[in-house]
Image: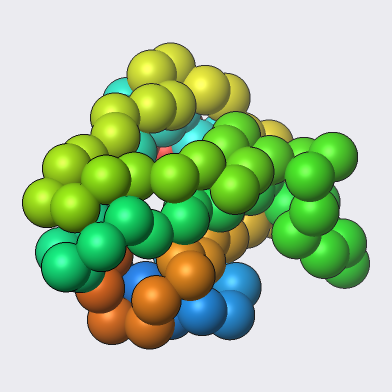
Length: 109
């Protein structure tokens, strides 16, 4: 068993197609401390964030947030202390490509 703790901090500009933000290492669990999405668009922007099992696809069934509208220049914080199993991915998209920034903070243990 791997007992090393690995800090995770990612900053990603989202697109209108699901993209993998992070893949959990095969022998560790991810403890999500927070996920924050900031809308930089001139109008509202929809956000979808999912925790996807290995070989699966992002859907409403495995979402943290699904079709959540975020107002102009506003942000949303979510995901405090979610546990994500080994091999899973955190995936996200927004409705307007390049107009939402997502940060993910946590650690793998």
